[in-house]
Picture (cartoon, rainbow, N blue to C red):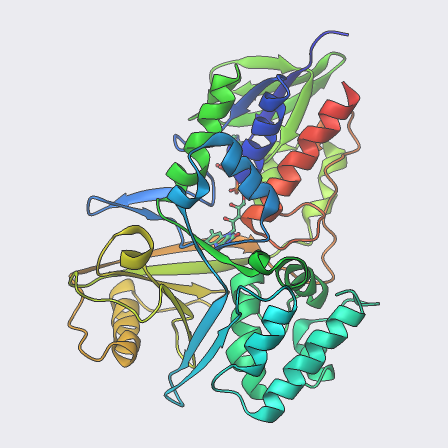
Length: 433
Ligand SMILES: Cc1cc2nc3c(=O)[nH]c(=O)nc-3n(C[C@H](O)[C@H](O)[C@H](O)COP(=O)(O)OP(=O)(O)OC[C@H]3O[C@@H](n4cnc5c(N)ncnc54)[C@H](O)[C@@H]3O)c2cc1C
């Protein structure tokens, strides 16, 4: 049998994870990416001489496949990622009070979470009792629901108090699923809790990149693919795909190329146009809707520091604030993340002013920022709604597969979801050739 020639359309995290997996098995792989820069929704951007990201990302200790690929393709992980045991500190702007949970890393999972809840600050005894009951319930039910429902309904049915929902569950849901509680799939949320809280204590660790995301992920992964003999074609848009008896012809502005196998690793909203000539692929994407994420970078004097690398905020526009000085040496630079927001409907300067006013409640001596930069990704992730039917990697077409954070799987739209999907698509090809 001739060696397959494989095209991966899309050089985001999913496409690159597929390409690394194929290249590691010495398969002949070509990645085609429309932008000049790889990385898709997880990429670095340059501003004011600094490398920022299109959005501040968090990785978890439970991101096993992502961490495995990072380890395969680059320097030791401790050089590129800052790993912190789970420590949540969430400031309520209305009550002017902190909720704080530290999961002791020396205890085995899930005891570290239970101990963290028992010793949490900012919760009443009743709150703690309700949270512990829920943790035990989830453990006894193997983090599995008989029927999925929204997280809002699930938490109410499981007797979670308003304080718990507001300080703990809602910030975690927004960070993990980027979907409002009233819409979010309780089962997908439980999947993330299962993988982070239930196996090994360090699965709950929070990992923050010491570099921008391009340097962390796409550059080393693309270099690895090229080093293994693969090909990366950036600034090349696949306009359409034609099925032939020998495989698939990919039509770009410069040429037509034949491949025996294709992995389509573009975002779900980018599929419709690309797959016009593949009618069997057109339906599964109708049900998708999207959620935005805005990151507001605020550059203050170099001496400005938060009390932790990452803080939550509630009863505010800001949801999470990251101290990039502590994370990656960009002193005085704070990155404020606002997930799953409605249309912010104000101009960027007003938004930055609102954020600045909120930040002064965390750091009273804060003077006006030197500069700010607002980055909004309107389609940051799909809405992780329980009723959503996500397509499989396998399609109705032979030797044509889908990869991306949106394909069927345990995870919401995350780096780990995208990586797992890319690896799964690559393995389908490797197993059959
Ligand atoms: C602001 C923001 C914050 C986030 N925060 C987190 C976080 O904290 N933790 C986390 O785990 N995840 C986070 N995510 C989600 C994570 O970034 C995504 O789930 C992941 O990057 C999706 O990767 P993907 O490869 O599936 O899709 P994409 O990144 O969308 O990749 C698709 C690629 O296909 C290319 N393409 C499209 N059409 C064509 C074509 N016709 N020809 C060639 N190429 C094409 C696109 O240019 C793109 O590069 C965040 C996302 C955003 C936007």
